[in-house]
Image 1 (cartoon, rainbow, N blue to C red):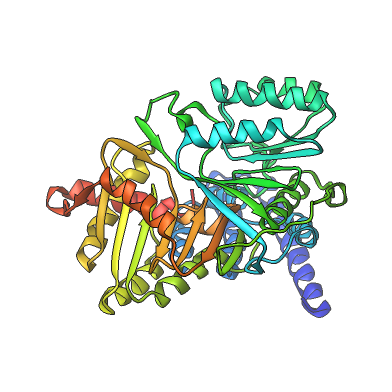
Image 2 (cartoon, rainbow, N blue to C red; image 1 turned 30 degrees about the vertical axis):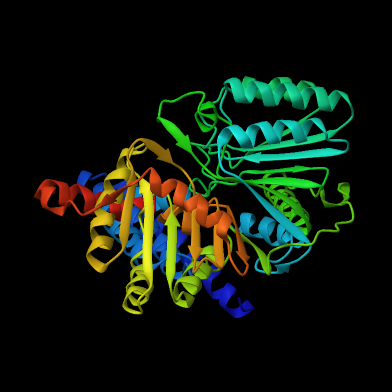
Length: 475
């Protein structure tokens, strides 16, 4: 921003303050209920107007979300501005921290070689492998999860980490404040008391809003000695290991990674640790020499955050849909897609691309389930073959294109994941990706075709859907 522009803005704010103080003194000298009411309303809309400029200037969000925010700011004087500044506006101080943090990690979409990826297709396999590899740690362990909930899995993890800390292994644990919001913070005290660093990411302050309540850290990353890493959709909670079957049998996908890709995932952890603590820990880590013959032609990390000018994963997803010539296979628990994604899907179908989508038939979040059901109707109308897993909860996020290219990781097909969260995905390319295709087929055997249910929708259902879908992208 030019110096002259800054001076003009400062002068405008100064004159606004003088005008408000002048009005306040007039009202104070001649008390009148109606004058006070309109004065309060004026101040409320003044704040909403300032917030409106922030909404319009936001290059990252889509036009649909902008429309909803404008509606909120028009209908709710004062309150609308408060909600916007507390949930979706990025404060200047946060931007500065992020700009510094970007120096600590590699650029997204950089091609990575000398790496390998192994599929862990169940919670049981993931946790057995994870705990086994943690026991082998010699130097350091970095752990980052969206959800860490007390239970059998958390207790087993805590026991291993405390033992390794006593052996001299440097351990850091990062968890999301909202994702782990139901976990008693005392659960982490044993870790801290045994020399393990624990960081709570993105704490929400009710009185002093920090402007990033919606910017959740949805990552699930574990790095052991820079030698191997775990990455995918499984959090630390009993339902992910099917110990607790509150949501039925929980099906999810995780990956064990080796080689240069481990360094890249650790750089994401370092980046997020800096954003949460303002502490640079980059120089504390060393990595072994990687000598791996990868079976993949190309590997790329897509590290997304609300601070990026444009959503990295979403842009890559559209590029891959536009590049597909035969098939697109999708597994996602939530389907609340932006309107801008419909056109690439419609064009792909017109080219003869077969699109298959598997999603949940068991709801864990009622609002997302209602919107998802209606979205399936809309996709069914344009030719998408949709399926629902009626007897299992499907938490996998995977996109397979022509059985040669794939995206997988943490991003759900909904507005908040695409635009507001810290998310990480991996892109791979190979002559064939049969191991992922077989994984998709495993889900397909447990799914039933969705043939549309719009005839079941009443006018009331339509209104509820439109309301939830409209505000789902900002709250």
